[in-house]
Image (cartoon, rainbow, N blue to C red; front, side, top):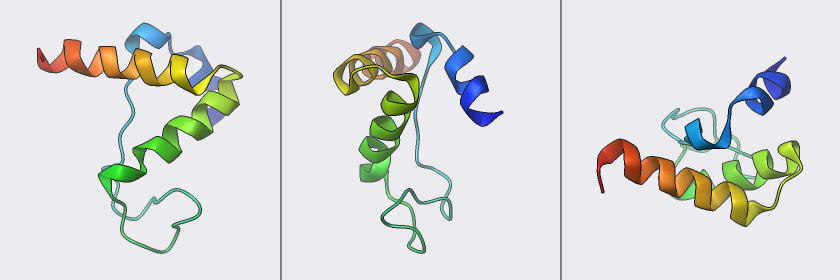
Length: 70
């Protein structure tokens, strides 16, 4: 269900975050989550969507800038 839901989100609406303090991505499970781990989240979901990491990265960077008016 999680993969299907994520795959249904259009890239132009997608944001990624690491704010959940105890849902740290592998290989750092068991540690407190940190913002720098967002790359691991992006790498994981790029693989799940079968798209290039750079495509996902650029899309989420653009979306974040649009959301926050940067």
